[in-house]
Image 1 (cartoon, rainbow, N blue to C red):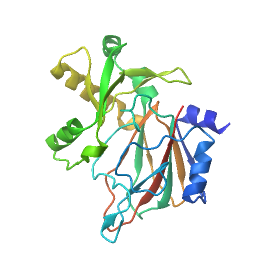
Image 2 (cartoon, rainbow, N blue to C red):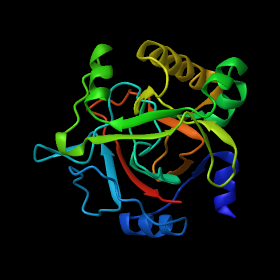
Image 3 (cartoon, rainbow, N blue to C red):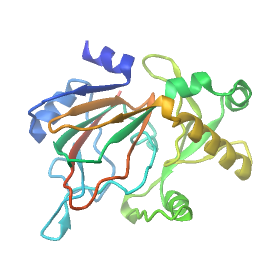
Image 4 (cartoon, one colour):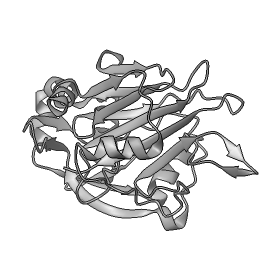
Length: 247
């Protein structure tokens, strides 16, 4: 069964899929109810889908441009009920660059220092999509802007979250959307989050996917983090269509 394949391997690629937007949405519905993206500025004509693109038409961006730097995250982890799977379809692919990197959060949890794991077991962290993320990006010289109507207030989730289906524990915090760990002071929280981020995204726990046109890639949001590699040049068109499904 395809769902079991995704749960086992965490990231699965289906090559040479001829899918228009409505066909992609129909395929995704076989795996769960569609989770519409909360961004109010979504310009895709289908509410079930978002476009990630560096293409403009008539001076207007087609979809959301991927940032020119790494932003490790899991999709919509700042929502009260984080989604199950994400499906990304490669409509237009640049000749070089534009990879997506995936980190194995099961492996990150399993190999984390036992003392850190014991200290953080049962603790909650705050997740959001707001000014705090822009501040973190600015501190590193990253020009990230989030429209006010797209900002999401904080929700709490476990630092180490048990997968709703497999019941395996995985690191759930991430650099992009985790603002702090509850129950520890601000300095210690920042240090722990940085340590866990570096541990989770070590190269031996990361898969880099080089797209071909018509790839459909599916990942498990509860056991992986992902990011663009930040290498897409504006003169090399890249258009990706994303659909997310709920548990």
